[in-house]
Image (tube, rainbow, N blue to C red; front, side, top):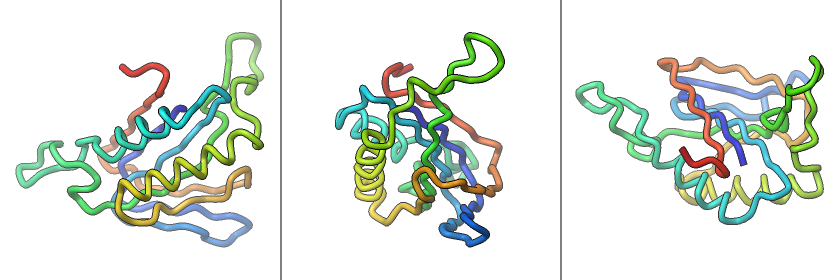
Length: 150
């Protein structure tokens, strides 16, 4: 499981010219799923995201988590996080899970993230053509891979 986490002051997702999700301060999480992902990946990654201390405290230091700030999360499915650009100029996405595997894992991740955040995580629509708008705060952008825990 791979995620790009962007700290934002606001964000929204639009599908067919209709805004389907919007948040204020928090994270936009782009999530990619691969066939080998398990409940352990979901547990580890959701805990890591909710615990990331990348929000400013009273002194302006990055010491607080999204939970400390009572922030929100907008979760977007993103199969292109498993793009391979090794050969040629057209990326291959064969490492990304097919929808029959990815959708249940994505939904379980959404549920676990909402549980840990103690509020409903906003989402786009899996597989839809989405337009994501955001104001990256900082900017702070972090890449996490559950199979490569650096």
